[in-house]
Image 1 (cartoon, rainbow, N blue to C red):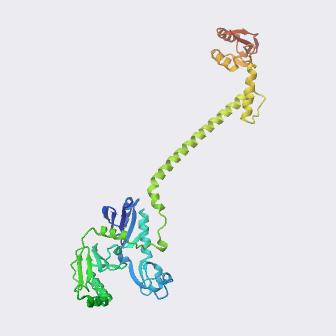
Image 2 (cartoon, rainbow, N blue to C red; image 1 turned 90 degrees about the vertical axis):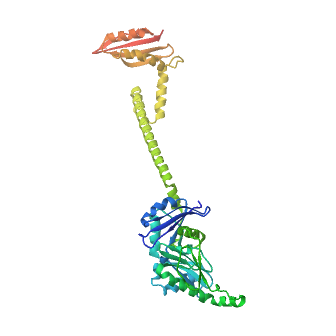
Length: 421
């Protein structure tokens, strides 16, 4: 997306934080506001999704310096820089993050920030779920004017930018002194050129004037200055436009931005988690179905083995299921008698209702003769009348021939031959 989120961090976590969502294409403020403290940064995570994020650092915590490059030391300047600036700093250089913003053959523009503050700002943003690839001092987001300084009042303080890579922050009471110093320095550095231009082109009252471009109302009167009141606008909008135009970035060295996979992860996190949850449920359901089918398969196999041992009482070992099936098919063919007529299973399905009517008669064995189309039953019962009752029931549908009945102790044994009418 072309929209950008600009956040102006602060020195203390309890200080207010200004932010703005700016669209450079439409020149439009999408949203803006102020947070009470760094603890509320997480509320901006919704604006950081799919937007480029830049963080402005308070210039009171960033030292911007111009450093002369020793003659012949251009190549080793980066490694020499901490030792060059060490004498001018009140802190140990090991505690400072030093960045070269721009370098020529003789001069380098440098930004210096405490490691502790860099780490705290990054930690605040990370904990809030906001990922940025850019830190820059807020004064370098002000418009740059070659003829003087740009200035704006921000949170009862003044931000000033007086060169492409130089700027400062000043309290209201210190502003006149800072401006007097800028004018004096500008006069010293340019008076020779201005005198030459005056001698060639004639005198110009404004030739030595230092121009102050003010984007906020300013009543301070500074000698040898020309004051231009620029069109006032929202301060964060002014800084946002300047930040997007600037190439300055103090996130270098160990703070160099890594891959943006975390930001993309936040965008897709809910979708991926939802998909993962659906997959877990699907896999769990699939495993449950497979286990259920396996249990059913085990039960069917156990029942098949039980029937096999009932049919073949002398065969206890069943090496494979294919062996079981082949033995059962062979026995079925044997019982069918090799006939092309109705098979045994058809007979048994027809006899089942009659046998159910006389449950006292128990089948001991049966033999089917396909050529004769007859079925011979060997059965037992507790008394003779049960055989007569079964014979009577079968007679309505079949030709029934009852063999001799013999009683042994409490059981009656006999044979019944059944043929189709």
